[in-house]
Image (cartoon, rainbow, N blue to C red; front, top):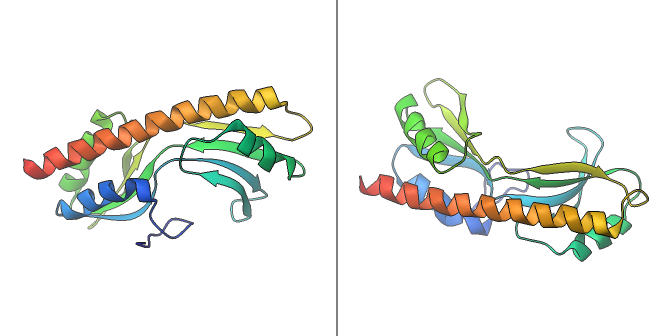
Length: 173
């Protein structure tokens, strides 16, 4: 499994093909990525995060409920979109890939570092983020959260596929 600079340190399998396409397009190098995920986190501070549950695929409400029952205090339930950092050979290369990302619906994308090797952040917009505490939420509420998170994660995965197709077209142009 290929390493990257994400906190987990390796590439999510379901995004590997897209990253390979970007890296082979010439003038681009992906540095970190996440294909989108659903998590339960115990977050004390930016550097102090305990992963209680994590999946890069749709989940069952019972999985989240069971993980929540093992926690104490407030916990974050999150569904996060795809995020990919790409080092580019030039600002023109960054702008080209940025236009493609935005065209497929990744509207929160942008150039985050300028200079000799600009860095582009490709990011989806689908997100769910709320505090849950086992003593304060019902099973029905968790079911509703998970249904919403799964729907948004599916939209994220669909946009990844559209981006993959667009990058393939970019290579042929």
